[in-house]
Amino acid sequence: MRAAARLPCWGTGSRASRWRRSTTARSPVPNRPARLVGEQLDGVPCRRSEAAGDYLPYLPTREELPPEAADAWTEFLAQFTAEEREQGPGLAAAALEEFTGTVVGDEPRHELVVTHNFLAGWLIRAALDAPKWRWLGINHANAALTVIRYTPDRPPAVLLFNDTGHLPAELRWTGFPPELHV
Image (cartoon, rainbow, N blue to C red; front, side, top):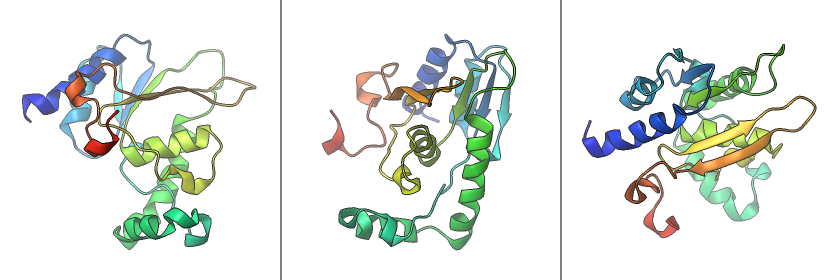
């Protein structure tokens, strides 16, 4: 892995190391970035989770989608295999069960989930109680941070979304086409 590719991982891990965390979950996809982030988190257990993987969380029908986006999104989703389309919703349900909601008891839980764009969009969509198809178009830069707070007797709160302030300016929009850099 080139140094330029390692830098976002170190930046993310370094920033996350300043927060109190109970545990870290990462994608089951063998990848060096997740390990590099984990190396910055001294003493925090890191576990693989199928639910933190890279998959289609929900496959909307054409009728669910906004008419102006239906053609493009239907074409985009058609590129995935039948197996990918079938496995994703079960994993997405498991992710909501494993990573969201308030905890039982009085001990707070602070969990870092090192995951992929689609699941990040799915968790944000759920936090905002948006329609299931709305994970589409919620895009993350590489190594960006999102923080969702789950408090008893309140709806979830998105505290940070797609925050790349821990990265050098030239790496803040990786994963986005140049015309979307702001």
